Length: 295
Image 1 (cartoon, rainbow, N blue to C red):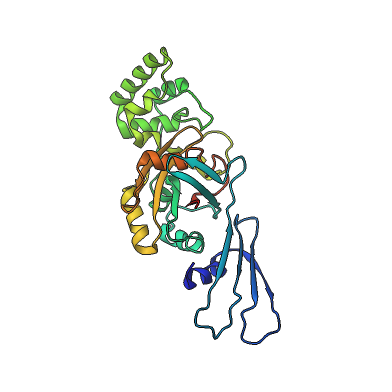
Image 2: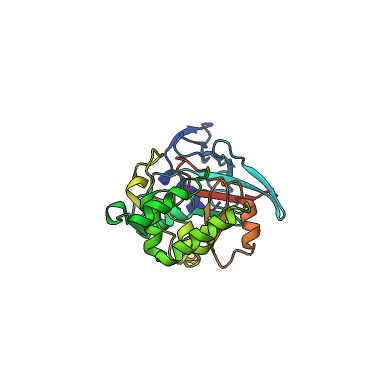
């Protein structure tokens, strides 16, 4: 890790510092950095070289930490990867995703790493939201939402407000066609046809949930898919040097919405790395997953 990145750890993480000196002149103290529970980080950094040594080196150790019920390591067709869940504050509408990455990711990022970003965070930064107060469920929304299959990943379109938003985006004829196709294919055990007919723009809608959830804010507005996700990833790489992908993942499915042009893995290969949704499905506040291939 470079000098600038190491210094940023102290600037951006909530941490406690402990300096242990050996009372010898011209030496860096041994330097220990422990993050608190809100940062999910455990880092040990020390410098054993003298100040006047031209080949001064830093040693940086990072312990990867997974969310509860998730695993740090995963084996895929392209190798074994470690995934570190980076906890953030609750990202508000209109925040700057470049600032978020500089604050939470850059202090940990190394060359060769890949950052997985939840699509919800980028959409919030882009203000891609629709407020509940601006959605007025009609007859068809109230009727069709009753037939939506609720999965462990969430209610989907199973609320009147979310179904009405889908109708607003797709138009009633397309939604009725999707509902008809879904009803027919369910007889043969095939699910998910409704969203395939409506399109992923609908499948990716979050929020507008009518029951108790981890974040009460998601009751008041719906979150659409981010705009130009591949372009966002390219911008992130140009401004921060962090290679990233933006994903829409649940405990059931994963879709790569966009990725940096310098990422060489295919979408299927990337999905393998995050197929278990390491960011979690509840209130973890870990929208950033740092991915590092194990040597």
